[in-house]
Amino acid sequence: MFDPAAEPRWMRRCTALALRLGFLPALAGLSVVLVLGVLGLTQAAVLMIGQGPRPVALLVAGAMALVLSPFLAAWLLRLMFQLDAARQRHSVNATKDDLTGAHNRRHFMQVAEREWARCRRYAEDGAMLLIDADQFKSLKGSHGGACCDALLRDLTRLVTQSLRQPDLLARFGPESLIVYLPNTDPMGALDVAERVRERIAGHTLRWQNGGVSSTVSIGVASVGATHVTLDALVQDSLSALQSAKDAGRNCVRAAPIQPRATPARPPSAASGGPRARRPGS
Image (cartoon, rainbow, N blue to C red; front, side, top):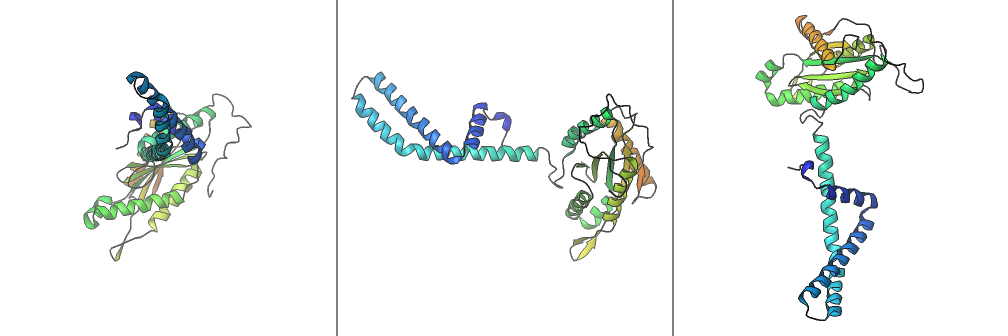
């Protein structure tokens, strides 16, 4: 398995330089370096041995280097480009959930922490949705794990279609998703949650000549003055989710709306931040 931490720093720098130059310029430069290196090693070997005509040795070494260096340089460049592609895939996989393709929980908490801190600093609107699939255990017992995996992927796709580009979606648990909605007031968050619930309730997964469907329960919590940590906001959304389950599932429940925190400093008029989402947006 590729481990970026084990990659030498000099190799990463060389790869970055080759990517900036492009293949042909990098190939030419690396070929020159290899030719000069071979000539230098040949010169050192002749001096150490002390035998044989030096011009002939340099001529033979130079000819061999000119012939072989382009092939060796091309192989080295290909290896560096493959390492860079593996590094990028590793970076993506470190933030994604393998099953749904959404962000994983760890990456979500890192990014949501920054968004939550900005909301607190400027007293902006923000909300958290916790979406849990209803009766997945019974579905797994009747249709199997593969069917539930396919259904969870469908649910993730449907939730994604209901969100804006700045909204952050991740897999929170085996059967649950979490969403952070920046610049979204409490009514706007409820509107998004209800839209997600209705879209999923009306969806049917085609499975083995039949159809399988599920509903979701959604807990909503809006950023307020008592949410001194992001975890406090998550806990409020968990409490609201439990209220939705206790109410019979396939519904949306919200934590009590709190006053927003006083901003540490007034937001700049030039910040150009997105406007708060309102119902129906």
